[in-house]
Structures are given as structure tokens and as C-alpha cells.
Length: 635
Image 1 (cartoon, rainbow, N blue to C red):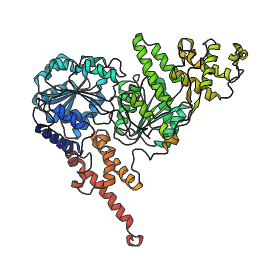
Image 2 (cartoon, one colour):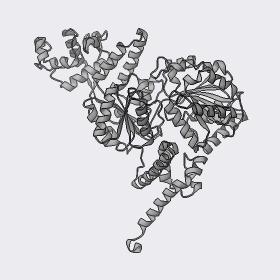
Image 3 (cartoon, helix red, strand yellow):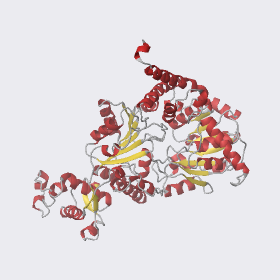
Image 4 (cartoon, rainbow, N blue to C red):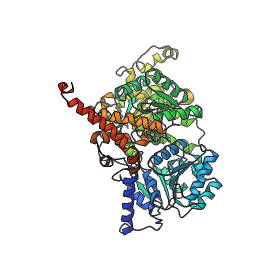
């Protein structure tokens, strides 16, 4: 690959050299990657790093972070070294770059000794453009010695939030990456992540010694993702309704908290006619690899997974991410839902949520081996997520505000915008709930307390004499479901808590007294049940062309892509993204020159696949012409 030369001295914006760098970057973007223009701050990041500057890049998933280190690598002398935490992600990136005509390799435990020797030999010859390496491999002395013997263009630290011990994806080996600054102080470094609140950002900068790096923040908004959180009633049935109504034949991820539940849900979905596979750390490496490979390479596969799945997945056409259990923080929720819609087409982030989720997550925090400071931090993070679940305002505004990002007006693409939540004055109900919890000695769970409020003569109520309490039967103005909602919301708001040492009993908190003393007015939301179908009905079918003819052409192109991908042994999206196939179907190019103008078709892919896809389009055009001929002329 032709390089621009080593521009290690930073220049100002008015320097003509900057314009030259930008033109070079745009040329690579068009020629290699097939795109006509940069998005957001990509061009600024690329220009800065190409000059030799360090950078810390916050960019949402699907925002084009990889271009921010791939293009500067091609502009500078030497090899770009990318530190990546998972083998699956490396394999995906290497396959995609190879399809673009670039020389990409990886060094990790999945590579045989013979292959490693060959790659090292090619590195010494300068016959590699980009090298992916695992962090634990990078910090070994032989690897560092190798890097001292070759010309390196830059170091890119992907998934940089893994360095944060307070984060949701901590990786111990990331703590050693400060050695790059110590051993190679003159080589630019770029750290990239899609998920980092303010404390995590500070920790990344400190641990990676990036205090002089320029910060680029492209915001956290993913406007193509629709956020929906519904009250858990019959979660599996709710999930199936959501899938059948909105995502027939689509690829997606369903997250569960436990390995056992992952297996159960995958089996249940399969029995319901969906192509579903489990993924969790308890499966053998071979089974995990096989299931992941099918998800990446086939259309319509659903992965049911624990949080062990996802960080190494670069599949752009994931049309939905569903949570059957509550994640532990907004960071985790954002990271996991971010797997959806990386291609920019419409996608769904759908979650069921209930009282049991709150109880379980609080229990996991309290029973962990973390110190008190860490536990308090985890509780604050969980409280922020509960606030997102219970909000009556725009979910996207709440989500982005957590990361210090703001949008001025409601997004119009979340359930609370499309189907606004109704609220009611729950002050009296809250007082009753707190009173009954206190009157029963803070020793019983919400189900039993609701039975007392409704005046139910259950075995437990009579056993403990709770039918004699003054509060017995004093809550019949609300239904059982409504009282359950009251207790759930009060726990989420901190006016009540759950004592796991007493099997989930409801306890008072310091804030409870402010309610009883009349110092607080409590506004509660009315729960919407079901799959959230009403909100979804206001949107066209996700990720597909809107008219039948274009969709038919798109499906023909997609079928041919699947054949080519199978022959090459790569995921279909490595050949072309759905967005590129949709553009082909809409514009119907008939020549190589017209095909070259389709976004996502670079020079190498044009030469390799242009004629093949033109043939598919040509058959469609000829078929349309045949249909236009009157019947008598055909005979």
C-alpha cells in the first residue's frame, strides 16, 4: 500500500500540509473503502493521528471507529498495530480488510507456530499493512522486541474501556498497555471506545498515559436504534410476540443473566420455529465457536447469550437486541444494545423488566467480594439504570445524559416518545406501601404485602395473623398488578429496599420517612404491558427496502452474496453490507462505472465482485422487461 510518509511533526490547521493529508485520507476512503465522505469527526481524528498525534476517541458503535486507525495507518510509514481483546473480533477485522485488498494479519493463540513464523517474517519484510494482536501477547518481551525491529505506523487500542477496573468489561491484561508509551514514546497511539462515562474516561487516560492525547467525542447517540422497555409479565411469550410481529427472519441477540436460562430460552425459541443457538462460557470452546460462526455467516440466526457474547461481534445487520434480564448498569445496557444496527439501518433494543430483576441485581452486588466503595458505586450505577427503566420522559435523553451527552428535544424513536407514559399521583399509595412494610416488621416480600393490602385470606396471611392488621384490605382501590407496580417503583426510586438476607423482604430506607411525613409527592407511571407493539407499529419494517420491487431485487442480491460468502468462507457482510445491496437495488447500476458510484464499493471489491452483482441486476431488468410484454406477443 502506498504511504504518504512519516509526518511526525504536528502542524496547524492553516498549514497546507493539513489539506494534503485530508485529500490523501479522502482518496483512501473512496479508493479502498468505497465511501464518498467521512462522518462526524472521522476526518479530524485521521488527520491528527496521521500527523503523529495521540488521540482518545469516543465514538458510538457503528460510528466508524476502525477507519480512524486504518486510514492513518495507510497514510504513514510502517505497520499499524491494533490491540484487540478477542480473537473473534480480530478474525472478523482481518477478513474484512483482506476483502478490501489490504494485507492484514493477526497474532494470537489461535495461530499455529508455523503461521506465526511466516507472519513474523512478513512483518520484517514490511509486507503487512495492519497487524491485530491480543493484549496478553503484546506485553510479552519477544513481541515487544519484534516491534522494536520493525517500522510501526501507530498503535491502536480498541475497546479501551477494558482498562477500567470500575467498568463493565474489565480485562486485567489491559492494565499493562502503558508499556507502549514507555517503550515506543515516538509512535502515535489512538485509544478507542464506544462506552465510557466521565470516571471511566479519566481512568483510561491515566492508565494508558494519554494525558497529552487529543480527545475526540462524537457523542453517544444511536438514532437508528429504537429503545423499548416493557414490564415483565410472561417474558418468553412477550419476546416471541415481539419477534413474530416485527423480526421475522432477522438476525438478533437475546441476552439472559444465567447460563441455565440461556439454554432454556434457546431451546424454547427453537421449538417455536426460530433458528436459535445458545452461547455462554459454560459451553465448550468448539460449540461456542460453531454457534458464533453460524450467527456471523448465516441470515436469520438468533443467539441467546450471557454477556460473555458480543464484544467481539462486528456483524452489522443485527436487527434487534432483546434483554430478558436486567443488565447491571447503563454502560452494560448501552454496550449490549449497541450490537444492533451497526449498519445504520433501523434496529430495536427491547427489554422486559420487573421487580425480580431489581432484587436479583441488588443481591449480586451485596453478595460480591468487592469492597464497600465498589459496592456503593455499583448500586449507584444500578440506580441510574432503574431510573432509565422507570422514566416517563424520553429514554434516549435519559440514556445520553448519563454519559454527559445531551439532545435538546425528545427523540421520537423510543417507546415513551411514541406511546407516552401516563402518570398518576401515587403519594397515598406509597404511604400505604411503606406503612404495611413497617407494620409487618420488614420481614415479608412484596407478594405477601400485596395480599394483605387486597384483603386476601391466604395461608400465610392467616398464619401470621396479618388479617387482623389495621391495613388489611385497605388497598382494594388498586389491583394486584397495580400494587406490584407500586412496590417495584418505590424500590427503584429508593423509597423502599429489598433485604436479600431475609429472602427478599421489603425494608424501609432513610428516604421512607420523608414520604410518611408528607414531605414528598410521589408520581408513579402506569405500566404498559405486552410486547410494545403499539410503539413499533409507527415504523416501517426495519432494515429492508420499503417497496416490493426493490425488496425483491435486494433479496436476489443477498442470495448471491450468501453463495459467494460460503465459497470464500467469510461472513456475508464482509463482501458487502446490506446498506450497499439496498443502494444497488434502488439505483440499479448497469455498468461497472455506475456500480463504482455505489457507497461501499471500493476499487478492489469492484474488480472482484462488480460484474457478478451486475449480472444479478441484469437478470432482474430482463425479467421486468419480459413482464411488460403483452401475453399474445410472448406466444
